[in-house]
Image: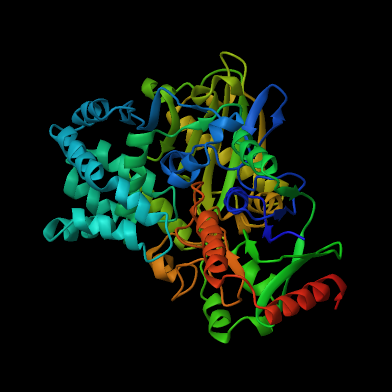
Length: 543
């Protein structure tokens, strides 16, 4: 019998399992899909000569994460690669805002939009240099972040701390207008803010845009050599080398609770898998409290709050095998791994407004990935393995375009939406469509089918808006991995600090489980007898 059962073999589940085995526990990971990885997988499903990432691709958060770095995955064969430039935001007139690998280069490019904007960028970087390390430490630990928070406060006494707090709460439109005279810096901040479901006018979007921009400036947007699946492979190898077990095609349908404590799980095949010490759930918040736990084990206040849980936007993705590089009008965009496609901050506001009003956007803001540019192993020389994703409403009320899209996402609607995304790319790269050798469409239902945590194609485990962060994530009064059920921990992106491949939710859950068990000491004789009885119940109870 394992000490812990981890439900879900996404990055958070695998990181949690690795930390538990490092703590001396035996661990079994159960994954519903045929292979591990969750949203961190790759394949050759678009074209046999091209490696395509199924979901996530670029990993600045992993590069910055002390959790990921501590695992030393390079010893498991993982290596990273970078595109020559981090990020590009081209405009149709040929200008291009560039996030470069070096601050001086980024600043020089922004001065081309407006004199003095380079100095403004340097000022933002100076703030990051002063607080970035402690800010990351505070973000990636359970709330409240006592140690990292104390260090951060020590650096930000008085007015400087209040200024940073204001910056973090500003809408990104306002932050860009305060800091930059030209469009370039504003575009870098606002485009990065739209990596989450934050409109340019949303409180906190400025802080998120600044954070992502500074991560890109400091760490780049690296990719695993050979595909996103290489990161998962390294996590699995490390876990199995230390005695952990990963079992795929094992969908968990119930978390078994006895006397208020999680004592195991039951699979769709009827197997009871006991857990000697803890169950860690790398699943969505609604799935945990609404499906896997019997309602009698969930406090009424949690069920009431669950009705207010908000998902982030749905996602529509297209993967391409291109027989040549992308013919960008702004030539420097060809050297960036990530490209943002929108004609200014106003266009981003228009896009977000359509989403919030339930309209399928007619000019979708696209995040475009040039994977061969970032990692030459992804496709033959002179070609490009590429993708783009955009967001769509969960509940479609209308189509801002001319195709009459309803959100049912049948084949005809998928093809029409993919064409719309390609037309958006064509605005900045005329002739792009002529270079398409093959494409794959991943509408919201397909993303969810590949990974149940991506509900409707929501990729962040819940909205990034301030009303569902910190002590409000996943529900008011939480902010920690512990749940109302003893021995059960939330280890998914639904927990603080949220989405992105950084491993913090899994690590926080693992540390909480280890800490709880260490603090409790050895079980008393009576407790041991109760535990044995509970484990027998998990094995025999099929009701």
